[in-house]
Amino acid sequence: MTIETTPIEGLKIITPRLFNDSRGYFCETYNRERYFAAGITAEFVQDNQSCSSYGVVRGLHFQCGDWAQAKLVTCLSGSVLDVAVDIRPSSPTYGQWHSVELTAENHRQFFIPRGFAHGFSVLSDTAVFAYKCDNFYHPEAEAGIRLDDALLGIDWRVPRDKWILSDKDTRHPAFEELKL
Image 1: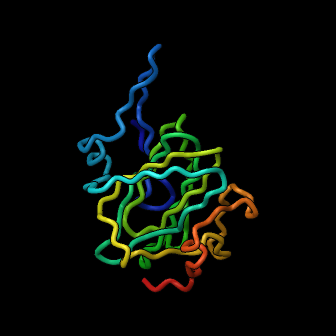
Image 2: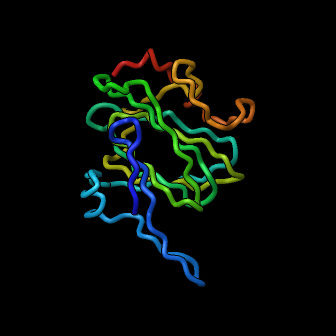
């Protein structure tokens, strides 16, 4: 596997090594020892999966306090633009975001440590998205940021008039209104 660092400390892009032959391919999607050696020391306790159609934009979600989560995300079919926003108030990159396209073809993973808001947009007709979390989901700790926050200026690579959002995601506050 190869691990790329990003301009934002803690965010990492992992590309597993593929072994292709006439039957298809094989790849190792997680190996605790290798990930720990690369600085990804999260102990994952919950796996989640979603299926969405083109134009769905999910996020920007995070959990507060003791229920904050690190995530290891990937796209099992289709293509998504995955986005992480640094919401660590003492971080030199507070308020900055980084994105990566995750596809079934590139097999990339995006590691997002605690202290980040997370979201993704579906770029293909459909996409199956999977993520490992290092803490359990607690609805009372859930929070979010507006997807179209002007201060962040995220290009979700889906025209705004094609966005499909949950009611909850339309009610998140602006970034500058966060109370962390």
